[in-house]
Image (cartoon, rainbow, N blue to C red; front, top):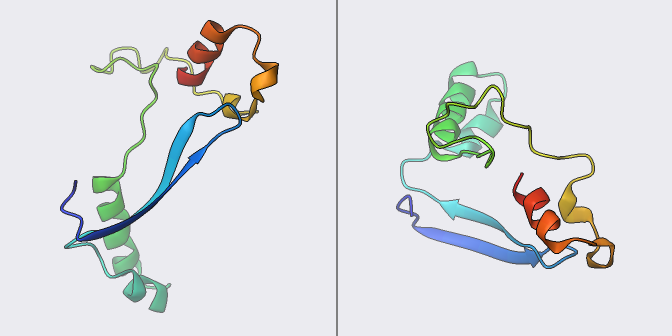
Amino acid sequence: VLGATDYWMRFEWQHRGSPHVHGLAWLPGAPDVDKVLASPDDPAARQELVQYVNKVVCTVNPAVLPDGSNVDSAPAPKTDPHVCNKAYAEVEDIQQDLVDLIA
């Protein structure tokens, strides 16, 4: 994926067993992060990094239809508190819990 030359991943499970992964990938053609860190006041270096990240990283609100036609009316993802923080013992309705996880 993305032509990674190397990668590192760590799998974890939330309170109720919801899996997620933390990871790093070394990608060919990626900007030199050391250059950005060495010159924090260089807007060109920072902009190069921002443009690259915007090209390869994305997030998805699963409530938005694939064609984007409901983007203005789709509910925002729940974040406070995020439903992944609910302990399994607190889940009363498993079907509603699954809906909450993907909303």
